Structure formats: C-alpha cells, structure tokens
Length: 472
Ligand code: SF4
Image (tube, rainbow, N blue to C red):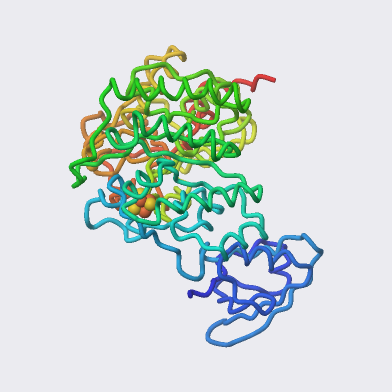
C-alpha cells in the first residue's frame, strides 16, 4: 500500500482554504484508507471531509468544509494506492514480451485491473475478477469497462491467454452486462489463431451471448522485431482484406438484428489492406477511438473544420495492442508545454509556444501509417512549403508503423537527413512526460522540433492554415 500524496492544490479551492498543501501524505480520508483514486473521489465529494495527513514527519488532521458536490481541489499522486492487479496470462501476442530490455520499468508492468479499465480505458481479461469486484463495480457503477475478448470459444480463449481461467472468465462479462454495466470489447486478431472460422464463431458468440456489448474493436496484433513466438506473424495483405470484408459482413448482420454495427476494424486494417476507410457515420460515434478505430476519419474531420473539438484522447503508444501498461502512456505527454498548441476547440486553442513561429519550410514528422493519412490532407492546402516526413520505426521493427510508437532514436536518424533552419512539427502522442519510449527527449534531436497536440485542429493551426469554422 502506498499512501496518496497531494501533488496539486487548486487555487481558491476548498482544500486550499483549509490549508492542504502539496506534499501532504494522506493517511485517511473520512477515517478510511483509500485503496484507489475512485474511493478518494467518492470520499472527497462529501460536504465534510476529514483528512488525516503527514506533513514533514508530523501527523495532523485537517477538516475541510465545503458545499456538497463542490470539488475538494486536491489532486493525489496516483490512481491505485494498493497494488495494481497484475495479469496472470501469458499471451503469445503480448507486446510487453516484445519490448527490448532497458526501457522504463513501468512499461513492463502487465496490468489486468478493472479499476484501470474504468479510469483509463485499459483492457481487462477478467481472469482475476472476483465476486467482490463484481459487487464493487455494480455498487459504484464503474462503467464503462473495456474487456479483451479475443475469442468466445473457451478453449481458444484459454490457449490465447495461456491461462486455464481464460475459458471461464467470460462468465463475468455476462454478469457485468446483466447488471447494466457498459462494456466495450476488443479482439486482438492473430492470423492463423483467431481469424477465419474462429472469428466467425466469435462473432456468432457475441451476437448470441453478449448482444448488450456497446461495441467490439478488432485490432491486428502488434509485432516487434523482438517477438520470440514463432506462431505469431504479420497479416498478409490478403488476410487483412479478408478481415475487413468479414467485419463488414458481420456489421450488416448486427445492424439487421440489433440495429447497430457492433464490430469495427482498426484503421490499420484498412491501411494494410489498401482499402478506403468507412464513411464517418459508419463508426456510430467512435466509441473505440482510443483503440485505433476511426482515428483517420476523426483527424480528417478536425482538419477540415467539421469537428468543434478533438475526438477524445488520441491514442497512446500501446493503445492499439493488448498489454497496455498501467501507467506511462496515460501520463501527460509533454508537461513542459514546449511549442504545442492546445485547446478544446479551434476557437479556444491557445498557442503556448516558447519559441517564436518562423517563416520557414515545414516538415511534419509522423509514423509511416500516419504519413499515409496526413499526406492527402496536407496536399489540399496547396502549399509547397509543407512536407510530410515518415519516420521508419527501426527501434521496434515489425509492423510498428503507428505514430504513437515513434522513438527518439528513429526520429533523430530521420531528422539528421533533413536540412537545418526548417520548422519540424512532432505530434505529442509519441511522448509521455516529455520522453520518448526509448527514454530520450526532444532535446537530443539534431534539429529543434515543435511539439503539437495530435489532432487535426492543432495541426492546422501549427501550419498557419486558415481555421475553418465547424460545420453546423
Ligand atoms: S496481452 Fe494483456 S492479458 Fe495478455 S499477457 Fe499481456 S498484459 Fe496480460
């Protein structure tokens, strides 16, 4: 158990008025030791909040009085104060097993914790879920949750998770749905393992057993050059096409029976298959945007002024594969601010650049997949002073072509071949707390870069292109 520490106190807040200070260690709130930030938030919502604190080695109690519902105004250090529940599966496709040695420790943490699913959208397999967890989720309405399904056939799921409990643990999915918890499902598709007939049976299983699911995202397995599992391999183009077609056919079935498409293919499938992305309406609200479903379409809408604000959280570096670490990619991407443009809408976006904008040719750094999406958008501006620079991912290798997985080493190599004096824009999705996945920072790059929020509105502003009014 690690006690929560106050890391921020909002000016003018109830916590500040009562004398709570940054660095205070919270031993109890309203007499209870909180297990996680969910319990902290529930207690902090009370009108009267009693905090047992340790400050500079001394114990003290602060009673905060505020209006019911008024925010306490004190942020604490982490999401989980007892231990993050780690995963007891050993999936062959797990990206954490495919990481090189020597990266940040937090990247190697395999979590399978429903609380992180509720708080951050991490996926849980439910293999460690218990009756007590169900009671808490239902009582506290911890909804929505994200669940890794992979296959509904118990034997296939057990084999994929390399865990005998993998077969039976979907009973918790049924129980959660019975209690009205919103669940988003994910299938990591491994060619030769859960595609083809297995996928067909999984879709039939979803329709038959779990029709209340909000949606199911189908994402290709992520494979790095450090993969040691011989049975894990990349999709062929034909396999990617077959998957897109199978998903579209099932969408028709779900639409007819349930009135919604239910299952969606990750953007990567369309890029791998060389097929056009579906129309925006076909995504039915982009529920799984953070899982890489419909990102190209939302970026396009933002870029062309068809969206008032960026769509949700732009995908972190592992969001497209199962095995997302508990912390790291959810952390602030670029706390220093750098030259990023941030804001919730085109109108509100506030330039926070620390270096003056220069009149110079512009290079947009992005992953190889990102380049295929950005190039046609940028071309519509008709400017020959802007170019898209794809960064080949040699650090991870394999099929790691998404922008979120770009690392400093690869960006530095790419930039070294580019001329000095140009402006180079870097999407913030590849940073976590100012660091790339390989631990380097933007300071080590051979040319200065401007870090820009990863959305179409911010990119358009950074390019100095006219801001288009959102279409009503
Ligand atoms: S992919 Fe997810 S469930 Fe499987 S071993 Fe990795 S962290 Fe655990």
